[in-house]
Amino acid sequence: MASEEAKTGKSMDAIMALCKRRGFIYQASEIYGGINGFWDYGPLGAQLKKNLRDAWWEDMIMRPCWGKNGPNGRPVRCVPLETRIIQHPKVWAASGHISGFNDPMVDDKETKQRFRADHLCGLYLREVASDGPPIGIQYQGFINDIREFRAGDPELTAVASTEGEALELLMPQLKKRFKGVDVSAHVEVEHDVQADIYIHDANQQRAWIAKLKMIPLALLKERIAYIKSPFSGKMGHLTDPRQFNLMFKTIVGATGTEDDTAYLRPETAQGVFVQFKNVVDTTRVKIPFGIGNTGTSFRNEVTPRNFTFRSREFEQAELEFFCHPDESFEWYKFWRDFRMDWWKSIGLAGDNLILREHEKDELSHYSVGTSDVEYRFPFTAPGFGELEGIAHRGCFDLTQHQQHSGAKMEYNDTERGEILPNGGRRGERYIPHCIEPAAGLDRGVLALICEAYSRDESRPSPEVMKFHPRIAPIKAAVFPLVAKEGMPEVADKLHAELSQRFWRQGAIEIDEKQSIGKRYARMDEAGCPYCFTIDGDTLTNQTVTVRDRDSGAQERIGIDKVAAFLTEKIGG
Image 1 (spheres, rainbow, N blue to C red):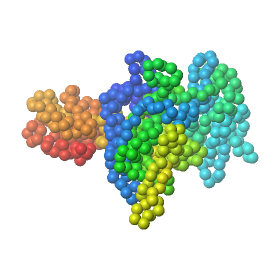
Image 2 (tube, rainbow, N blue to C red):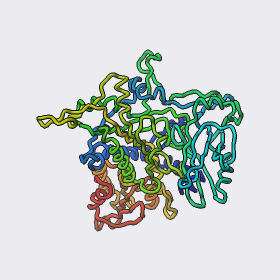
Image 3 (cartoon, helix red, strand yellow):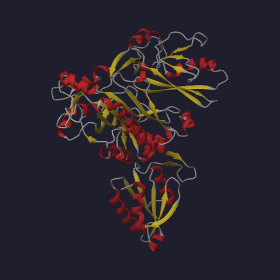
Image 4 (tube, rainbow, N blue to C red):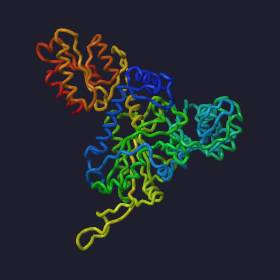
């Protein structure tokens, strides 16, 4: 964790400790030792996540894109949907999850520990054009030897059991290749099918990012006997890799046979696709339009890690936006840019947030284009972790469900086609293309927590959570300076007024315990942006002290102006 703090100024250990102490996030089933990959949200975390979910719902469905027009010049139109965690098993056959949602698994014969086979690292490095980054890295499978970089043989290769061991083998060659340059590197497993490798040039303060692709299963089977186990360190102690489906199985009904097998959904998107025709037939929506929903999904991750970043149960906020094929790329660019702006608007603006367009070899087989909004978490620094993907899915999903179910997924567009003598249109039938902005709410909460976490050693508590007021779980706190002289009664009245006015936005706290400095400290750790103190002057001139969390500055305003002050700062 020390390296994380050196790179980002923030310690993940400190952030996790604050999350536990202040009631943001707890380990699920903690009194029984916990269960890996599952997390519960405490009082502050639950409200923070609700505020994030509500902000998404308001800006994507109720008032899409803040009321802006789309590339067609018309207001964006979206409708809500809520679908079930358990869908018909054929849904997942049509989507490809049953056949393709797999990871190759390997067991250590001695320790019985299991892990993903594609996390065994074979690295293959190539030099690229001189006008590009000095290093390009492309996964080619396991290579059984290690060769030095030399003229006419532009290859650096290594084979290892772990990412760290692979880099240890590569570092001497990297340093030899870049003589006189302070080179360091690390690997961060990023997606289900790839890892990111970061090579750092300290002298020039640059970093080059490359990809490590999933190991081909056939090649892995050939080499498995010659690979050391990352657990025992012994060669020949790994089982042959076999595919492991990431979906959780369950049984529907009382008979409990294999014929009754169903799955907990690995994503919320498919529920939207199978209800597409019902939404079109029962509402007045017309192409282009979006269908949005939020909900819990499940993936039986083999190695959950990095706090809530990769969990087995997580919540998504997804929009499936349907449009004419000819307009789809313009809508893709529109949603890509808006989603980046949206994350900035709730507090993630700055160098820690980037928008990364996928390379062609990263795209799913059905995707025309995909971009990721990525955030620099302490555990990914100096690199980034995926926060949201914006994918141009083409007509793949609706086509698949049409083929597997027999239900027609074509849309009859009466605003297109040949103009008829009566001035109307002949109409055009087509399967719409889909643009999918898919955000992870749990990752969003984690990014907001990491971004908000800051330290100010001059304060009673040096830890301050600088949440954007819109998503802060506690919007304001009311403090009677002392618990006497009528101050508690005035504080109670103001607290009741503010709670009645702002309950939709978040909590309004009241606290009269301990010194005012300690009360400020508690609110700083909770991320409360404004504190109002009732003191002796309040009783004589009806003013209160308002203290700003970020700056620590204080000013006096009329007690009758407090609600208007908060409305201006946080809305409502």
